[in-house]
Image (cartoon, rainbow, N blue to C red; front, side, top):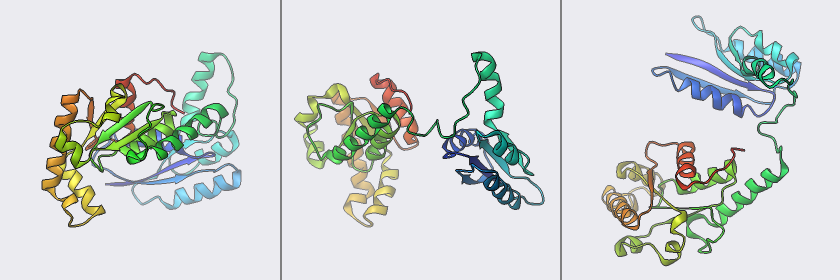
Length: 270
């Protein structure tokens, strides 16, 4: 079974896509073709979007549309499309206005714009920090909020960047080397910051697949090597008392949320 889904907004469409995708994951057995239509911010663009949406209809099913269009005129055009339209603002804004006792300020892009310039700068600074402290590049970790450790290709870099971009968390990472694993001991510069450490592990079969894409046929990608590294890393981290999470079946969003919670790093999502 296949359905076409559109995420439409007069901004980035990130909110529509995130919320809509969360809802769609609750329905198994359906293949969703997902299309994002951002910056639909004029009546003309809205009519073009409607035309595109209606062309996607087939003889059995109308497309599904998740809309977060702020402008009432533009939103009304999209709402009239021959489709199943879920307008998130119309659904929630009215009840919220009633509860809060004030009317909304209808401005496009507030959810994912720069907004508070201070928080934006915090996120950019944290992103620069993650890039300059990636893959053990720098051993000066005094300013780190969290330090991710684990074998190569276990998901440390993308998780660090997500923590930085979305939460303004200064996240460094260090790949455990064969020398570290043979010694069964964390390097001294990491032990100095043990309260900031968090381990990422991964299923060896999955790790082998990832590494095979990077270095086909190499010892680095062999299942035997991956099993050795994962088992040795997990044993070391348990001995050192470092908390761990598996990235095998967890999204970056899930990993970041768990890390923030487990380390007590309270951050507002930006």
